[in-house]
Length: 170
Image (cartoon, rainbow, N blue to C red; front, side):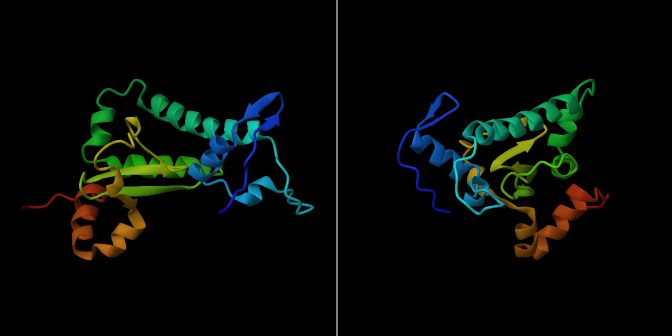
């Protein structure tokens, strides 16, 4: 994706720095066709307020859902951080589909941490909220579907212990 924005843009009385906008478009994977008129095919600057507000709205919806999910459920955070993390990632991923959130979302797995999370718009979420990108293990996350294919032996253990929750003898 190559978005060529190299000047300050004024929209609805707000002035946007072109470098910040370009970074936002790249970080949140906003495609150039999101900036074009679908009927005429003309490229135009749609409301940047809408685009940027939509990104924050999605994040706020996700964090509100997590907060609401945990209300009144003593011990639920511990449960979803210790053994049931796949199922919370699955809940978030499904929640995005059901709420018609038009963003990229998928279940991610970190083999080093042995933990699942849901990636939404390039951010990772689990029951605790948005995960810190500064973590030393942040680069170890990969899409669950990709990891599943690459690790045929280890995946049996992960599926058995973390997803199916089967009892077994060591």
